Length: 207
Image (cartoon, rainbow, N blue to C red; front, side):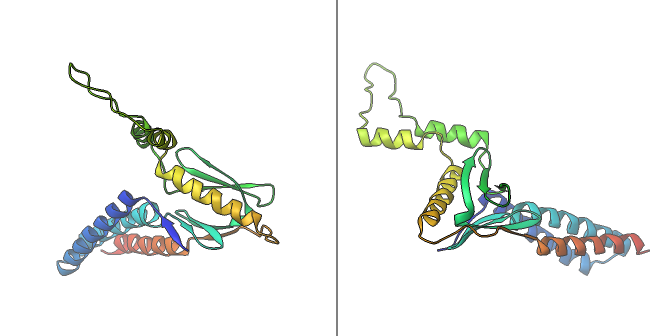
C-alpha cells in the first residue's frame, strides 16, 4: 500500500499561492503593457518555482517495495532491505547501505522545537485544578502508559517508526537482499526553472 507524507501547511499555502498567481497572470495578459507586464510575469514565475520546489514537490512516499524521498532537486529511491537505520531529530534521516553507507535526509515531515515541546506537554498527565474543592484526576495504568508512550513524539517520529518497521520486515524475508539505491534529478523542477529563466530573459530583452 502506498502512503505519501508531506507538510500539510506548506502544501495548502502553496496552492493558495498558485491561485493568486493564476489570477494575476490572467490580469497581466488581459492588461498587457509591454515591459512592465513582462517583468511582473517573470517575478511571479521565479517565485512560483521557489514555492513549487520548496513546498509542493518535497514528499516522503512509502510504497510496497521502496522508500521514495522527493527532495527539491532530486528523487531518491531506497529499497526497504537496503535501509540500515532511521534516526529522527528535526528531520528524518535514513541510513542505507549504498557503497560505504549513505544518509537520506527527508524534507518532510519535519518537527520543529515548538511541535516537539507541544507533543511533550500532550504526553504528560493532566493536573487537576488547585483549589479548596478540586481533586486530582484518577489516571488508569493503561492511560498512564499511553501518555508516557506519546510523550515528546511528533508526526516525524511516527513516520520514522513506519519506515523502520518496513525495513526490518523486508530484511527478515527469506532471500531478500539489499539492492541499489537509485538517485535521479528532479526533471520537473529543472523544467520549471528553465521556463522561469526564459521569462526572465524575455523580460530583459523586451523593449
